Length: 133
Image (cartoon, rainbow, N blue to C red; front, side):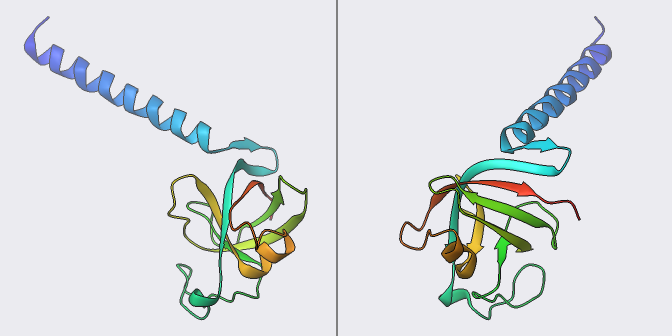
């Protein structure tokens, strides 16, 4: 094979491998069903020391509101969060980015955490499901 053709083949194969790796990574983060995004993982919450600070969406964080931070869901998205330890649920609106801890998939406001009965535990296993707009 000529050197130019070999280089093009390597580039093409690298692009294909990169795309497949990206797709595999997306698949492990959650499933898309007819109602939207769905994922299982760990949730944490943030409260008093962040109260009043600006969120990534530009609004002020209110620990008493039913809001949450997610890495990629659009701002304004509504998601149902289910505490898998006790089956309690809450619907929150995404208004911030995070969490930045590796295994966590959502950071909840203190009010949302209270409704899920997770204040004492701090981090709990959850299922999140994006609701249709």
